[in-house]
Image (cartoon, rainbow, N blue to C red):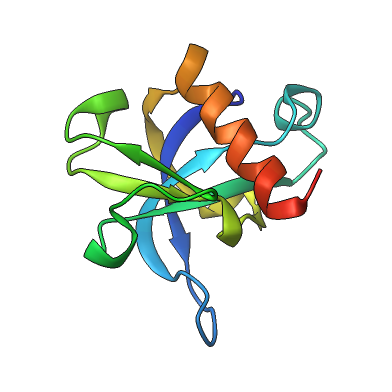
Length: 115
């Protein structure tokens, strides 16, 4: 489990406008946390196929179908960044985000958190 991997995540229960349900999520927490067996939580960015978010914005990163193993085109929503228990990650990773794309994810997080 390393930073940049995409897993299906189970975001139930949730409330209000939070992303919920079974969906891809991009692991963004530091590997020093991700790989420690005693540390039971990780930070993820939920992804969506909603047409509303399938356009460039300062807090979204767009992915095409098949990119990083994704079954559909989707957007990573940095403004929905959340920490979940590792048990919410399902199955093996679909793929991994690296290079310029991961830099784009980092920029979206910085934009959202005003860093």
